[in-house]
Length: 89
Image (cartoon, rainbow, N blue to C red; front, side, top):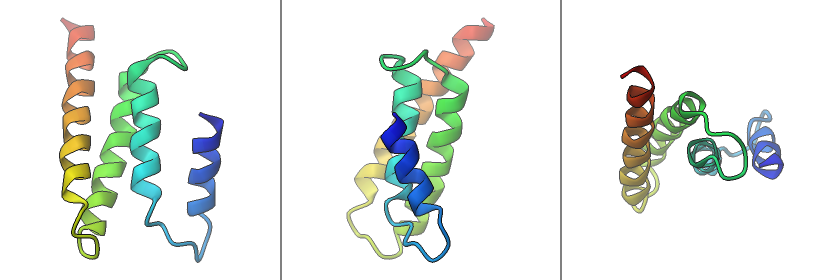
């Protein structure tokens, strides 16, 4: 988990290529959603997934293979939303 946050810091530096940023965000979201490494937090996971989705859409302009990642992160968004809905029902 710490390594993902360090990677995120690295791509957030000025003049750094943020090509990998959405991938890192998606993986951090998966960690928060799964709750195997840390306590599950669907809200934090959803926040990371939404940022990742935005980045993947931006990357779509130059990466023809990103569509599978868009589908994957959308599935994770639905999963996080379902967990959040369960909390209020």
